[in-house]
Length: 140
Image (tube, rainbow, N blue to C red; front, side, top):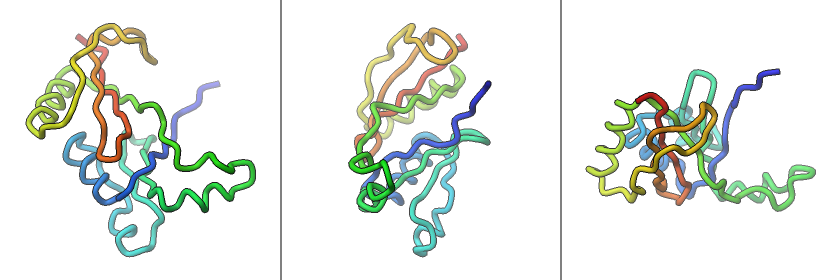
């Protein structure tokens, strides 16, 4: 059986601000931004792959999600980190964009294990809400 990752929910203070970060820094396309601004969508998403998105969900909606049967107390907690894999060239461009934007980022780390084995370079940086993003590439 092979599952595909559909989405990950990240809790954010301001979905519009977060969508701008993910668009400007990571180049991820915002989805439903206009609908969110119009009050027609409960959150904004950004597209990672054709089949995977990140939902940028406002922390203010956590109480309603905690009311889901079996979910009490689970909404609003951050994940440890989300890892995005890319080509070596895309990694270099992202590192330059992070540096140019004055974003905090770890030094490169080598040979961290992931879905495709050991990655030659990885780094970690926070989004505006403190969600940690790992960027990595597998190709040399």
